[in-house]
Length: 313
Image (cartoon, rainbow, N blue to C red; front, top):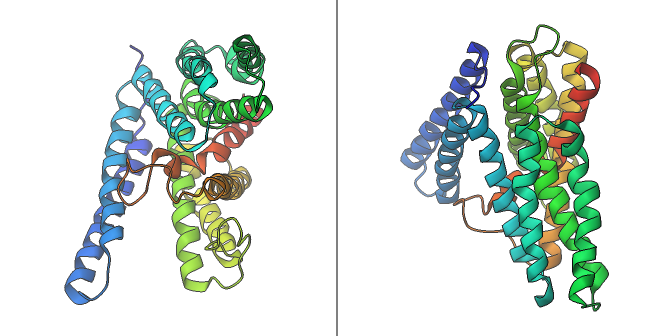
């Protein structure tokens, strides 16, 4: 069992997150007392779910490396399971889905072994080539292209993309950077989730001009720009605590996370709109399913990882 390096800066950042949740609880309590006519039940449910998610994430992050990797593998499994539950699959493909799920422990095994070469090609190449062959052996050709594309896209998004979070944990320290991969994961996850909240708040306050109304009617240019600017400023403020980034690289990282997070969000929204559902599941009260919560990370995780890997490793 390999321990993760938990720096005081990481603990301070986690403390700040818990302080934000306490403030959110106090704010909802005051709203109930001062404005009982307001309906804030959904907000209260969201905050309760945030408490559960943050506590679980904290335990997974600070316990040891294998537990952390296993946690992200579980997230990938739950997200892929939700994806297959909302995307129609052929009856013949049920035997193929076994191999799709089997790719999850194998992908995270490469991470635990710190085998970057296999990690980066296993799903995009080996699984990509194997699954169509397995489907051909079943002998069903109707809707073959749609089926194979759907299954592999789900694997690329829910497993390959999210697994970049876990590989951040096993990156060695670089340039006298003492916080290590835990700091990078916390930086990425916090900013991605904060970006979602910031874009929502700015959109509610100032939103007038819709970006893509057919995909996500509530997304506005004001919300998007406000979220990008706010997230980038926060990235500049906390980069010194959690990352090896100098100020210009912190700005770059903030832009990558905020913009790609938005794209991931609306991409999953397009899938849900296509299938006629509002939420991918009901595992997280007030939020929906796992996929509803990690949609932004499906884009921000791989792009942030390769930004870090290119410039620092």
